[in-house]
Image 1 (tube, rainbow, N blue to C red):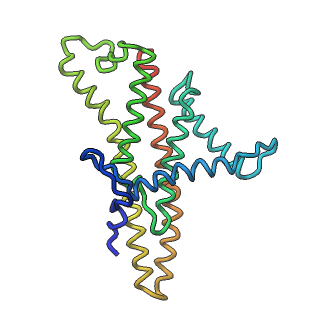
Image 2: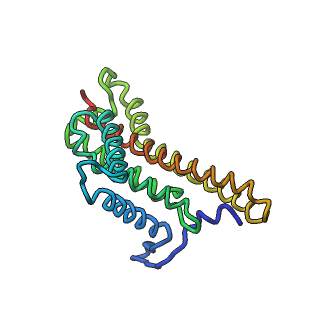
Image 3: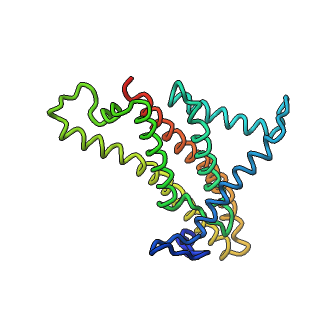
Length: 240
């Protein structure tokens, strides 16, 4: 009945590599399930490219165009090269959020480590894109044009901290939304369990909250996606 037990990471297959714990956990399992389920659902819905799309194909095409529009508006010219990465991030985060709504499942997006890894991946990709396109001139990002060089000891650390803080803002935003929502679901479900026949009323709230959490799952994945797109756009257009 403890609402925090659902966030406990449990070892399924222990594995130690020269003192480094690389065990396969319930968090690892649901990361794999999220990737497999997302790929399988996409394949099932678009395996037949009908000229007049059925509901499933139309839904995926609408979602893809939605993410495509976000990437185009945030990145600008050349966004097509990064669209597969951005769409994959959206699907992975969204599926992780959705799978976590099922009873006895595990929400890996409620953990700092995996979500932080996604955020760092987005940061490294944006930095790599910036260096690739602008070479060493990209490092002028930390000393914007018009700032006197004499102020570099003050401005550069501030800009560097701001740059490094980006993945933390992504991570904390997603993790806290998932944690708070799942705790509330657990508490209300506990009321249903102990109330017997009188649990019909809190059960209604649980159903409404699940619908709300589904919307939050999409919204958080979209926020994660649009911020990743913005970071890529900033890297590409850093000196334009």
